[in-house]
Figure 1 (cartoon, helix red, strand yellow):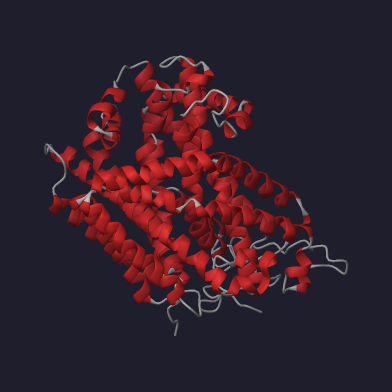
Figure 2 (cartoon, rainbow, N blue to C red):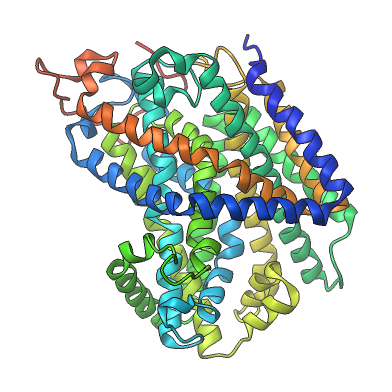
Length: 535
């Protein structure tokens, strides 16, 4: 029976207590202090976040084209845990939480009305509209997804092919050897777990405000959501994602991910078919051209030469946030990569999810810009006067069947969060447990229940009695050390790519001179294996 790793379990728990107390004592001062600290950290490491995202994307492309791409994760006889559709659905659903539902119409509004001064773009013009869509593509497709993809790849290779333990130190085994199994690996786990707990609490807090605001909007209730309503929503969400996590990967999470993906497709089809379809298609092509033509320039834009703060508030902040989630998301992606080649994993964890998110953004952002540019819907005025969470509901007012689509959207938000949270809860429990292995991949139910409940209690306390701003900024600040972890993962990936046979336990993956063989093809109809063999 798995036991608790105290060196991983205790530090996050102990550090959360003073954070909650300080936020209670002076929430505004707590948030401002952390915000100032984060600004300092981003000023010092923001350039690294932008550069690292591009480097990790390039490394993913190089690995895909290299002989290492033919290596089978789990050995040549490994059978996939999940079918390809399930793999795609889960990766998409973990990457797309409530945030993309909330920010889909919001981010392009900001870029349309307040583009960077140093680029010389006049706000509220067609040029600003094109810039807005291309920037949304930059912030939500291949560039940020490369973080978790590469971490997941190196964890999968270390966990299944090198027989390393279930720890975030495992991807660094090619660099630090046996130290990845010791205190160094557990320290990495503790730091990343702490960052993820506060990040999940902040994310749940945002979801509660979005759902609570939607409830009030639908029933015509004025003012902010009541504490009782927020507590009821919180209880429903925590119960749902904790039960899904306890049910495990192949039952709870897989079923939710399939359902959520279908809901996403239906929602996109609704907006696309009943919205400005011709404009969306043409605008998407135009935005894609701008995205590709200015990709490197925008990806590495730091604002240093013009003293422009825009990249700190947007691109660098986005890349830092994606990097903060990368270790734990990568751990989960690596776990479900069993039975596929490295190349197939990259397609289903990077290329196809990026394509799906690009289509999502093209449709939602296209409809938003059309409302603002041609229909004068004044979504920007609503954002400034009533807050971010009101924009999506104002957006939906311009479509038919609004009384039907609003509760449907609230349901999509609910399912969206619990799917992502269930996957993360499984990972948090696994990091704290000894004995997690390919043969016994699930952590104890008690640990899943503990972390799921703790996140829910923390989020409810923050939004009810204090402010969510402080805990959200704390999650961003705690994610800064993950930049260094991702830098080490890049080096580790390059080391393994040059000589994978040196580190792979399954020597039958390679020919006599150490070149990876062509992996066997897994049929989409192959039966799923609930317990991957470690042979």
